[in-house]
Length: 324
Image (cartoon, rainbow, N blue to C red):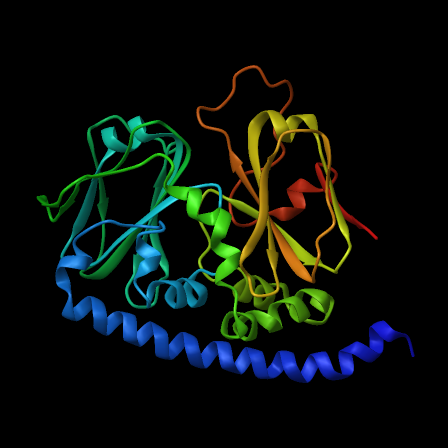
C-alpha cells in the first residue's frame, strides 16, 4: 500500500469529524449573528463592507468562515440586511455603474441565504436610475460585488417598497488591502473548520458533484462560473485558456491553504499560465466572469454562457492540470 493510500486511513476519519464540527459551528455562529442583527437593527440598515475595519468585530470572521469561506479576493464586497420587504427592493443603478466596470448583485432569502433574484452590469433592461426587483413578502439580504472598480467606490442607496430607506455609502478604493495579511489570522479553529474540504476534493470522484459544489461553494455568485480542486504540498498549477475565452471573459484565480484562508491570487491574462507551487496542502478556485462591457472585437462564437451550470461548454476551452 502506497503512502498516499495509507494517509487516507487517518485523514478520512479526521475529515468526517471536521465535517460535523463545521456543521455545528455554522449553526451556532449563524444563529448568534441572526440574534446580533435583530438586536442591532441599525447595523442591518447599513452597508457592511468587507474590510480590515469590519474584521475588528470578533464575530465577523467566524461568520464569514462559515457562511462564505471561499474568499473572493478580486472584488470589493458589501452586504446589507436583513430587510423586511412586502413587494420590492430597488437599487441606485447610477452609483453602481460609476463604481465599477463590472458588478453583480444578488438578493438572498433570510436566514436561508438562498439566491432569489440577481442583476449585473450585463443585465438587459438597465437604463433607469433605480433598478427595481419584485419579491415575495419576507426578509432578505443584499450582496454586491464590484470588479474592476473605479477610484471612487460607492455602495448604492436602496429603496424598500418604493420608499428610500438606505443611504449610499462611500468606501476607499484600497479597502481590499486587508487580504494581504488575512493568512495571519490562521489558527486551529479555522483549520479544523475546513480540514474536510481538502479531503472531499481529493476524493471528488467518490461524491456527487452537487455535494462537492455545495460544500465548496456555499454562497455561489450569479453570472459566474467556478472551477476548483485540491493542491498537494509542492504541486504547481498550470492553466491553459483558449484565446476566445480570454477575449470574452475575466478569469480570477485564488489559492487557499487548508484552513480556507487565501495565500495568493491573480487575474489570468495569458493563454498558458503556471502558478508556483504551494508550501502546504490546500485548494484553488478559478472564477470566470463575462467581461463588461462585452468586447466587440472577439472573433468567433463564444460556446458558453458564464452561468452556474453548463461546465461541459468549457471542454477544450479551459484546461487545468497540476505539476509535481
